[in-house]
Amino acid sequence: MFSRPRIMTLMLAVVWLVAAHIAWGVVVFERGRSEPTIGRLVRQDERSIVILIPQADGSQITREILRSQIEDLIVVVCPDRLAALRPENPAEYRDYAEELASKRKDPDALVTSLRLYLIAAYLAPETLGHSCLLAMIALARDPREERRFRAMAFLLDPKHDRRILRTTEEDRAEEVIDEGRHGLLQAVRAMRRGQRRAALQWLERPSVHQELEKYQDLICPEQFRSWDDEIPPAMLRRLLTVEWLLGRAEDAADSLSADRSLAWSQIARQRELAPVVPLTLETLTEFDPRESIYDQGRWRRP
Image 1: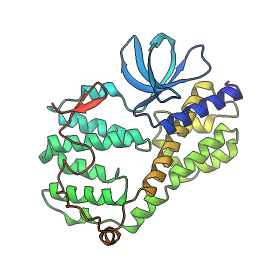
Image 2 (image 1 turned 135 degrees about the horizontal axis):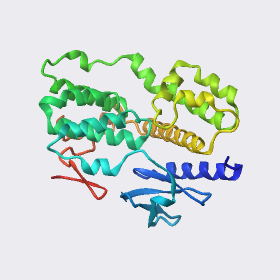
Image 3 (image 1 turned 30 degrees about the vertical axis):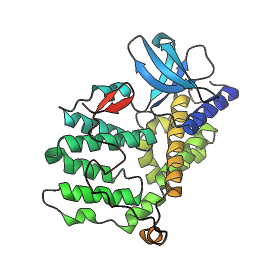
């Protein structure tokens, strides 16, 4: 079982990673070391992994860690999976986007899923375009982006079903108040603090139970219920990871709500009008779908 100082060290480490907002961050638990190594995954093979580790002065150091020394490795988005994608197989972009969409509470998984759906739609607009845009609607990061995704899905729909363009106040309320995410975060924190009864009370809520199912690759509901006050060390790491992912999601939601665009009337009054950009797959998001090759940490055109 971890000592209290080590638990606090792990918590501070994951909070630091959230604050640094490292793309495709990894948390490496090494044998014989009390503190995890946190950084950005550069490459990996059967023998070792190479990560960039941020320093207090803003610089980064490169470190190779042998797999024989790794006790546990947590990666949300896999660079090797991205590097294996090829434009001649657009469905593979869609398939990996679907996997990452199930982990969309993590900001890295969310933005990568959006990018992959967009690339798949661009590479095969007639066969994949409409379905990919429908999937992107559920991943929209704010109401304005959701409207753009709906409009693009309508344009790519052979039947041009106008119902795609509609949203409901109920949907908006679910975006503003994500009870499942908040409840699961409370349950995880309570379990980590030894407040098992309170944690299980949170888990009894259907929305919280449904949220936990999204993290079954880390912790399943049955495992969550089976723990007593002595949580096994390996599962404690998984519990900390879920708390980290949920915390990142809340940070991202707060950031989005603080950065909402001005209403059109406000923009007009401030004379900040700009040319309207045509709605195309190339202009739909900040990602360029023509950059479909992931190479050495960057997206580029074939």
